[in-house]
Structure formats: C-alpha cells, structure tokens
Length: 312
Image 1 (cartoon, rainbow, N blue to C red):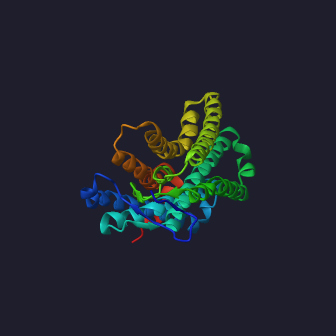
Image 2 (image 1 turned 60 degrees about the horizontal axis):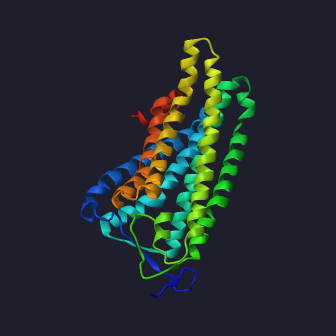
Image 3 (image 1 turned 180 degrees about the horizontal axis):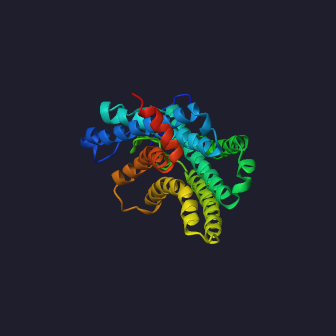
C-alpha cells in the first residue's frame, strides 16, 4: 500500500466527510448549527461592544468576560464556516495546511478558555474571601498578565500537536469522518505509528483539564468554607449569587467536553455520528449560552446591554 508523508512537497488534500450516516440530513442539521453560530456571534460581539463602550465596565470581571467571549468566537469560527460549507455545498476538501491550522487554533482557543475559567474562579475567590483587598490584588494590569500567561501556555502545549501530526505517513485513506480536523480522528486514519501522538494528546488533556479543574475546585472549596462561616443567610445568598454565572458557564463548558472525550476513548459501541454531533455541540452550545448566562445573571452588564438594545 502506497503511503505519503505529510512533510513531502506533494501535500495531500483530505476529505471532511461531515456526519457519516446522516448525509441525507445535512441540510436539516445545518439549520440549528447555523442558528446557534449566529446567536453565539451576536451575543459575544454585543458583550465586547458594550464593555468596550462603557467605562464603568472596565473592571477585572468584565475584562475576563471579554476574554471568554473572544475564545468563544474563536472556537466556533474555527469549525462552523467549514462545517456549513460541507452541509450546504458539499465542499469537503481541506488542504494539509488548512487542516493543521484549524486543529491548532481550535485547541489553542479551548486551552485559553480553560485558563480564563481558572482565572474567573480566582476572581470570585478574592471577591468573596478577601473583598477588602480585591481592588489591589486583581487590577486590570494583573488580569492582562494572567491572560498573557494563559496565551503562552496554550501555544506551548498545543503547538506540538500539529507538528507531531506532520511527521505521520498516510496511506490511501484520506477521508476524515468528521466535520472538522479533530486530532484523534485524523490520527486514526494514519498508517504509521501513532503512539506518540495519542500519548501526547492524552497527556495534555490530563494536564489542562485535570490541573484546571483542580484549581477551580480548590477555589470553590475555599469559597464554600468562607460562606459557611458567615452567619447571615442573606449574606450567604448574596455571596453565592456572585458565583452562579461562573458555575453555570463552567458546567456548560466542561461537561460536554468531558462527555465527548470519554465517548471517543471509552465508548467504542457508540455510533460515529453520535461522537461527531457531541463534538460539534461542545463547540456550539457554550459559546451560544455563555453570553445569555452572564447577561441574565449580571445586573450591571444586563443594564448596560439594555441601554443599547432598547434604544429607538
């Protein structure tokens, strides 16, 4: 069987097959996909616009919310335009450079998002457990530095993923049974030794998700301990209400991701189209829901958004 190497000058074109088994329903599937994408873009751009325009919102919490909105836009935009081209026009071809670029930015934005959620948990911890020092501990400059640290971490952890993939040989099978270049799916169609790729993929998943969830859990453990020491029930409720939006966003972000990752690695009996739908929902639902959650739960932001959207 003839193989080609991804580092050769004759670079191959892969075929993104969409959702195998549901090709006849691609047009119908594209309707909720496109609507979710439009809603997510609209919601996140509204947040960016309002925070940029309103000087009173130039605070650490809202800067973090803007960072989250940018990662939401980036994650969904890495995938949805190409997926919709597959559904609407059957434009299934993707070059090697396009596949590796899509893969890098998708996982880069995902890793950045996880870092931002950790920083948000730290923000809530300081706000509740050390409120008198909040303004001095979490300044806008410090939030920017934490964002830069998250960006550097994302680049260092994710850059080896496409670089390691480049070294793999591929045989005659160039069909990727997915709507985008998901790493594990592309690796599986290689006819070379994929041990290093799988090991590195599992390693960074454990490092990113395991470490970040541990830090978030530690923050909320300390928050709960501080809240339980407060005697007033009204103060209890006020303290916990400040965390509600962040907890909802975390559940919307990590739950679909973990479920999708587990079905890929452990759910051998699950149909391939279920894997692919879950992988797409993870990139569609959180970016669409996150602006709604913060818009509903954060009164100051809700009032400012209303100021612009209710103008006649």
